[in-house]
Image (cartoon, rainbow, N blue to C red; front, side, top):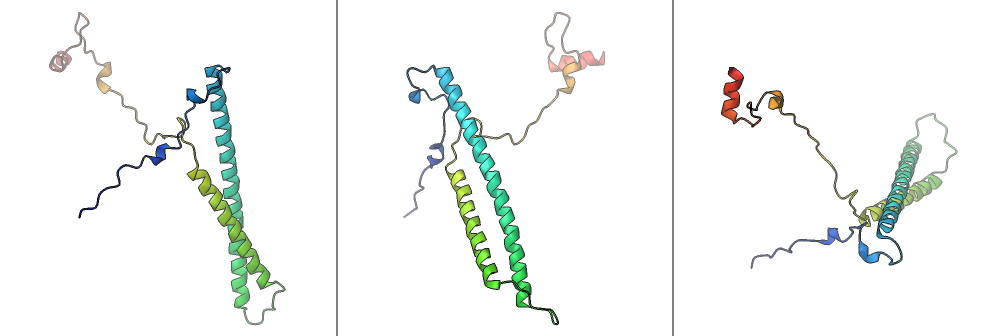
Length: 163
C-alpha cells in the first residue's frame, strides 16, 4: 500500500500577529489610535527581546571561555610537567564550576529557543529582502519617437538611428 502524504502544514501561520485586526479593538477607542498603540507595543516588545538575546549571547560566550580555560587548567593539572610544583588549585571545585557554567549555558540556550519558537510574525519580520537589483535601460536616452510624438516600432528605431 502506498504511503499517503500528510498534506500541507499550516501551523507556521498560527503565530501571525495582525496590527490592524479590528476584532480586539475596544469600542470606545479610535481604530487608528488602537493600531498605533499595538504597533508601538509590538516594536517595544521586539526591541526588548533583541536586547535580551544579545545579553544572553554575551553571557554564553563569556561562560564558554571560562569553561575552556578551566578545562585547559584541569588537563594541565592531570599531566604535570617534571620538576613543576603542584598547584594549589582544587580540581573538584573546577569540575563543579564547569558543570554549573554548562548548566547555565543550557538554560540560556533553552530560553533562546523559546524566543524563536514563540516568535510572533508580523508585517515587519515576515519576510526579508535577499536580493535588490536595479536595471537601467541603455536605450532610454535614444530618440524613439517620431515627429508627432508616437513611439516608433523597434525596426524603425534602428533605421532612424542609422540615418
